[in-house]
Image 1 (spheres, chains in turn brown, yellow):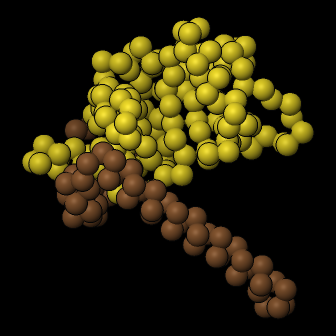
Image 2 (cartoon, chains in turn blue, orange; image 1 turned 90 degrees about the vertical axis):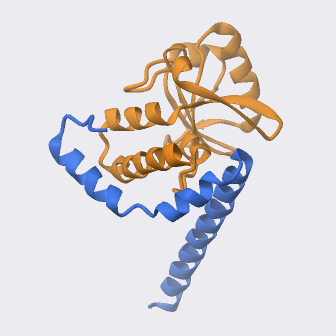
Length: 66
Length: 137
């Protein structure tokens, strides 16, 4: 599938395709639609929690004068 | 969210909806969204905004923050067109007790390619690999 007019973009995407973790995708394809959404929600919640933890940490570092 | 339903492993924090711009649907959309207190994402908090049928009719694409999270409403998508244009390129999905339409994987890739955003390159690469894997599955 080559649809980019921009040759550089196409080359970048082709290169990125080699780095895609196919095992994750194969596992997802075994799941039902609901399971895929639930798995994604858990990942999104973890990401948001990590973001909040990072913000808290930076706030603490500022108060400590670090 | 369409990519997630197709099997993508990438995390996204907003939901994109391409909506039918017919009046009955604009009424339904406004009725469903108003309780979620939609506001224009990134706009100053003092900016008056009410998501009702008139607003939906006068606008086209909206990037919203709601009580349930970020939501983008598209009357038209670059590379995809309107809701009616996309209907033949959608699949019906049954999940959580409802049936809804999701853009098919080939069209999703085409739309992301058409937008030409640098940040979408990784997503496009993953979706193309997903398409290969789906055909083997």
